Image (tube, rainbow, N blue to C red; front, top):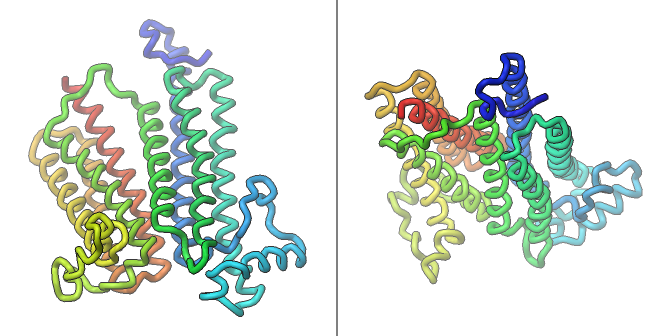
Length: 363
């Protein structure tokens, strides 16, 4: 019978093996969910960049699982789309074929979200019923499922903002909330999977300089992605397409043009793009510092490898960001930039988890 063998240090070898097998199974399931969320983020980026996100005017969690099968249904959905400002101001006259083109990407995006929910709740119930999930993790996993369901509602709340008069895109604020919750879910599920696979030591590890630096990278990555959400929501990437200067200056002259000052952080295109650049640069510097410190002192090999991976993926993401900006936000590069952002977050969390375990082993 599966159970947490750490609660039974004198358990027979076969029971301890069963416990390890159960933890490995749970971890693999959680990592698969993370992979699906990564795919969802990439699909979301492609949907937004292609202008497909407003093509479906209905939120039908069950009926919407199936695509249109008849010409009459296609025409009904197209008639709904023709009522919103995006069609009237941007896509007027592009016909049913053009509508089908943008419809399918949004449909796949929503379908993938439903599949994530099924991939989470089905195995969760089976693993729970067969006692392969530790009791202490069950409330957390149940909460994550609820938050995942709420993410669907928030997604519709975001989409609905694009139906308002004179709007041809969704609200940047709602876009950022939708993106932030996706990242929170991803990070929580990834961290849970890592913990199940290799639990933290019972004693809390001391946070040294290296741990502080890696933790700073993780925080900076989150802030940079949120800032990137405002760049996407305000279409700030289509302006100031030079690097490293913006309109010939390091700090754009219109950085604080709006009043009150806080509006510049989320509405001023110059400030939004500059903040994203600044946070990305700070992330790169923190990752480089963590790598230098990790190799300058005796550090476990697993931690060094995680630091190398973190520095490498941060460098890749920085290069992708610059290339996306200079090329004026092509869909392919911009979608890759959004996807690799999740890989950077992954690398930071893996490094932090490995460092915490290694430090705990040394205490």
